Structures are given as C-alpha cells and as structure tokens.
Image (cartoon, rainbow, N blue to C red; front, side, top):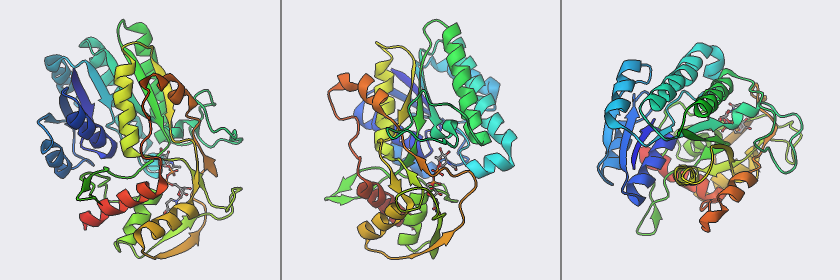
Length: 344
Ligand code: UD1
C-alpha cells in the first residue's frame, strides 16, 4: 500500500509513521510544513527505514494536487492541523484556513486522484462543554456543539469528508475523535524506557507535558486550573490515552475499511483521571517534587470529559488482540518524563 501521512513530523503523526515503518512494508510518504513538526523526528524515523519526505504547506493547493496526482496514494492519514484552543479563539481564521479549508482541498485532491481511504484526526472538542456527562462516557451520538473555533474547524472538516465520501464511489473514511492524547514512544534500551520521539512543541499547554517539564526542572512550578469542579477531588477529570495506542488505531482503521463502511469512533480509554491524580502520579513515578499552585478555572474547561469507547472496541473486536496496550497512567507519565528528560 502507498500511504500518505500529513503532519507526519508532528506528535501523533510521527508515532503512526514509526509504527508503519517498523511493523509494515507499506510505502510511506510524510508531508509536513515543519511549522511545529521537527526535523530531528524525521531523522529518527529515517533511522528505522526509508520513507519519502515532502516539505509542503497544505495551503499550496496546486502543489498538493501535483503530489497526490504523481504518487497515486491508496490511503491518506491526515494529521496536519493547528491544535491550540486559546489561539483558535484569538485567531479563528487561521484555524478555519489551516484546518477546514486546507482539509477540504486535500479531500478534493484525494477524490480526484483515486485515493480510496481517508483517516481523519478529529477531537473530543467537537462535543464542546457537555452539561450532563453520561456515566458511561460520551458516545459518538452525543450532541456535537463545539465551543471554540478549533473544535468547530474539525467538526466542519468531518462534515466535508462525510459528504465527499457519500458523493464519491470507492472513497471511504474513518474519523477518530481523540480525547486527551499523552505519553511518548514506548521504546526500551537495556530495560530502560528511552522514547525516541515525543511531543516537541516548545510552548506546552497540556497538563501531562507541563507536569513533566516541572519534573525535569525546566519549569519552576505549575498551576491546577480550578479546584471547585463538581468532581470527586474538585479538579478537572480527563480521559488520557497513550499516543502509541492512538497511533495503532489508525493502522487498524486502514485495514477495517477493506470490509467495513466509513464510520466515526471516539478514542479514549473510557476512564478519567483528575488533574490532582495526574500531578501526583508524575511526582511518584519520577520521584521529583515541584510546586503546584491553585489558579482560577481556564475558560471553556469542562469538569469531566470521558470517552465511551465501546463502539471502537466492539467494531474492532474481530482483531482478537488487545486494542490498547498502554492503558496505564504511570506509563503515560513516565514516558512523557523520559522524553522530556532527553530533550534537555
Ligand atoms: C485540550 C483541548 C481539546 C484538545 C486537546 C488536545 C481545551 C478546552 N481543550 O484538552 O480540545 O482536543 O487539548 O489538543 O483547550 N490543566 C491544569 N494545569 C495546566 C494544564 C492543564 O490544571 O497547567 C488542566 C486543565 O484545566 C484540564 C486538564 O488539566 O482540566 C487537561 O488539560 P489539557 O491537557 O490542556 O487538555 P484539555 O484542555 O482537556
């Protein structure tokens, strides 16, 4: 198979690229503008096995068409996007251009050049701020009601993809709505966990990355955003999924579309950890202490976001192998820390 990964130099895309290079003999092409993705990551991937790299911004429509037309990809896995929620509120047009407009063009080029499968990274942000979280978590039929341009730019792209697929013969999709992705490459050297790739984005906003920066001493302290939520310990609860499990789901999806119809799946483990629990876990697994202040709630942060992942588990049960290998908050924190440590 001939597979294109957009955003393959970025955090999640590089973990999929790693697995495809290590575990399969597919021909892999990474397309990335390197705005947030890293050259070092590409070098690490190249040490696994050869792949094509094309430095290109998806806004270059003619060039994108030419790349797709000359390569005749079977599959596109589309990660390239802007992903910082507060930035999307300040600069919504950047998000509608980079995410919705560029994705629409990519889909158009895909349908025109015979691509058969399109795997799209979407987000739990499409569900917005759920008022009544079902105890079983949020399923794919839950009302979509994004509260920021980031979530809306992804929801609009989902719709474009669904409509294009309906109107195009032999063009199927899987849309994954990610909950909180965290962790780094599970790779051991002499029994020591030594991630080769991870999240390199310099201005961290995500909880586990920030806690790991405190643990390695890059950051003096951090804050818990709100301790007055209606949750067991009064801090926000999220469903953290290891990036390697998330990446594997994309490989499963490519195979799934051989015998199944297009669909949407939530990706999370279906269980929540509070901000306090995550910070305590980071301190315990790294044996490092750091200062944690209490700060006001961050605008737009729901109290609890947990995936109902039963649809993914049920539809992929035929694989008869574990769908999740790293459902372990300690390992998520430890791998993030070890990655951060070697970035120093
Ligand atoms: C965010 C986005 C979400 C996106 C996801 C992945 C928002 C509202 N949500 O999820 O749409 O899909 O990233 O890109 O921006 N926290 C602290 N202190 C910190 C950092 C975070 O207490 O220094 C808390 C947050 O308030 C939250 C939890 O930790 O309760 C997780 O936050 P974060 O890692 O930023 O992810 P989300 O906001 O859940």
